[in-house]
Length: 160
Length: 251
Image (cartoon, rainbow over all chains, first blue to last red; front, side, top):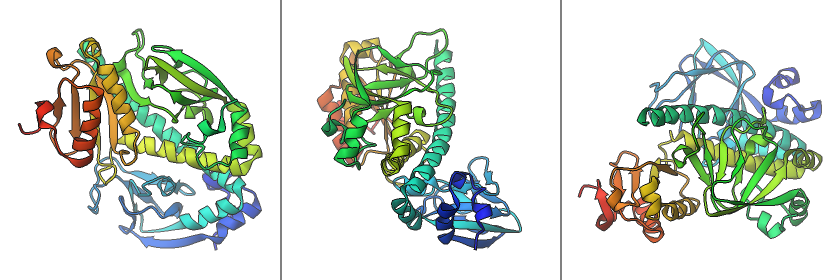
């Protein structure tokens, strides 16, 4: 079973108390992968949140339905980092693929339906988790927005 | 205080009960604006969450030392949608500037601190609102990213050419029709944006429709009714309206 000590280090659960962490612990499942295994695929229904426990998890923006290719620089999930907010956002599909990039990997899988049941039962957990995820998505949104504004600004200035 | 019937239609409050809506309604003040008025500017402390009740609000990146222009609009927000979600996300700064882009705009304003306090004290409301907010911001992020090629996210870009010549010919009304049409169900993959003159002033208002993996189609002499037809026929069903095409579309 995943320890409470580990769960409380995971950013998204950092503000939860022991009882709340215990509820999360009940639906947390550790899964092992070996190098090259695909953990989840871009375009698949996003039914789980994933947390890196051990090993390197590589996130790739490979074209939908094509295994292995990398369209842009990959990023890595470091230990205790969560991935999979898209399981709470329509159309509930992963937008990246995740691969085990070290000799072996251990990841925690949290089923979306189990999490939603916990949130319904204890709205404080739901509020805190959604608040955290909103912050995480908001940060990515603003970074992308900055990039687009910069590109379009340069394009506009070059037309003057 | 805002009417709960109005709040019930707002994208982030749709799952709330009447009592919850009433509590939120007490935090709201209303503001009227006219075309060109600025609600907030890039870099301001994000102290308020805003709801568009009527009209269109443009979110723009303003270039230093230059007057704001529709060319720098990244997105346009219409009735019952929120702007200023940065007020609930660290570092609580607006990252774009917001301008009234229709002749009149009516907005609802919620102060960040009392809203946060309410959501924390009433976690059931807090959970519902934050979950809805995540869906809204997540969807907008995916749309902005435009990288999805899986239905319903295959990108479609509708560009209304809003230079002076276009505006004089009625392009602003065409833009409003496009923004209203894109807020309909099933059009999450469609982005409406503005751009400058195409160099075809005689045929303004011009609108370019680009569907992924298809060539661009430029429609000429558009009006709001024609814009709605383009959404219904071309964008929703892939049928190009050849009679109105200026360029593209294999004609």
